[in-house]
Image 1 (tube, rainbow, N blue to C red):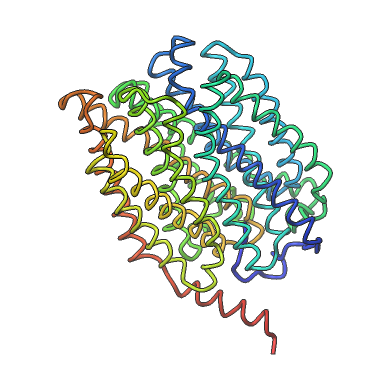
Image 2: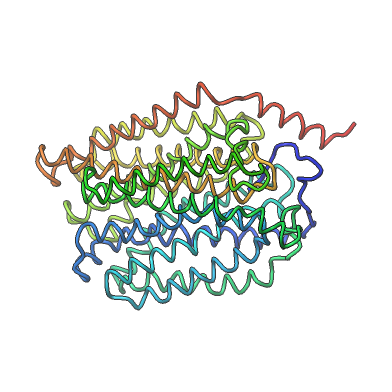
Length: 500
């Protein structure tokens, strides 16, 4: 991911010019790892109903098949980001992809609920190693700003397309083979990818000021205590909000970890303000980079919107309308097509302010969410309501995702690329985890008083809530996004490209 703000001489990364063929091959490998991370999550949406029957899962257990991945993925992103910034990210990337392949291979042979949930949690840890390291490597592979913007859009687009293709491929495995092949497919792709990356990623492109330090300085820069405090806090927080929809928000199993996590977060920020700013896991100055805080808030939206749509309609179509797994996946295709088209818009940030692109995307998303709130509970609602909502909403969310991704790296120095990438991707996961817990509670409570799960009222209430969230973010970006930072960056880039 590209840091596009001016860099001081001590922050300037060590760039090594690579051939175009080598750059494209590396980008393909990074995107493939991103694809596998998203695929390993979305493909199981199609398999959940089968897993519930074959393993005799309870509702809370089937929820944890998805949530275990999100919990560990989001929680371990920060420590992965710090390792990528301080040590050589090539090792983290190859190790993460290898781990993903090996764990997925083992998961394919599991037929019991608890071992599968544990392996899903381990898969999340392996996946969390790949994203920050890939972002740190992209900084050096694509040092030119326009190339970086295009690389970001392509990298992000792979995750969004994988979310839908995962539904389709997972549905085909479930329908014509077995859910075991969802895991084996990941292993078949991941293990050769890791082997290839071990040879084609030049070690020298990962060298920066931080990872060229002596071993003692690296260990100090890692801020192991701060990272550990925040990682444990995030695990407890996500566990609490995920359990809230199944165990009840007033239960001790939810309130105790929630309170402890909040106290630990406060303790983390107190610790970070006391140590040296250059060795903090998340230096306090990070939140004061231009537009960083508002962009972090916007990053909570994309996976929240997509996963809500996936969850609502896969269960509605398969459990209520009795559609086949394949039919349900095919009807989701507009989401992937729209996301793919919008993934090629990265260069627009060189013409327009990311603020206006993000607001445009949110506008599309709001219109789509209104359509889904008004109709979608009957088969005949698909073409007048669901299809245009999927197309318009996914296009809008992809615009928001891509240009938030680009803009947040305009604010950060290259020495923080891995950490900022971890924060950004952590926000994506927090949004989906907290959002899905909220919408599950809303849907359940409304259905309890309005006709049960066979009625659309609970699902409509979810989309009205989602509309309120998008509207609040739209207003926040309108007010708090600072365009002067973007103008300053453009002036700098023009000066660099034309010294005269």
